[in-house]
Length: 234
Image (cartoon, rainbow, N blue to C red; front, side, top):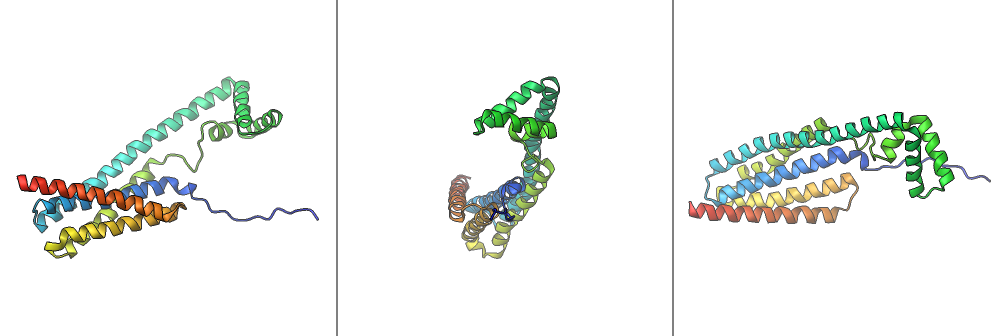
């Protein structure tokens, strides 16, 4: 009895890599930078009012900085991708045989026999030469393409949400326990963010949680120490 191919659904995470990276980066930076700012100002004997003002200023400035930084960075990547596509299009027109040889060599390097590699390269270039070279020579695809606006909006929004969490903890805690409450809640927020990011990306949760909380605790400790030193000096 001949074997029949049974279709099955597959779920991969690579199609989320663009917005997921921007979202995790924005939220993590929002939580950690705002919490560090609050703890640093509080360690310098700042009043609740000055601490909250500093936190709000950090939230607004950080969200705009994240949006601008992500847009400029990802736009540079997008410009490079477009320049490579234009260059490849020109080469396909001017040197079609050389481009066919190049694609054949790629498939040979991946394990195909030379004759089969030539046949595959020929058929793919007859169907969509530019698409074949973008995918297999330049490693570009629709999934991994740079999206500057998506990255900027995602980073700014998640930064603002992340920054609001330690702000809420600072407002809810008694003034004498404000720093402790912000530190404890921030570590919890970072752990949850690490777990959510790992699950969304299909990665291991424990490693992600340990990594993000360790560096978060280190940043908070350093910031609090600097605030204490300068608060005493001033």
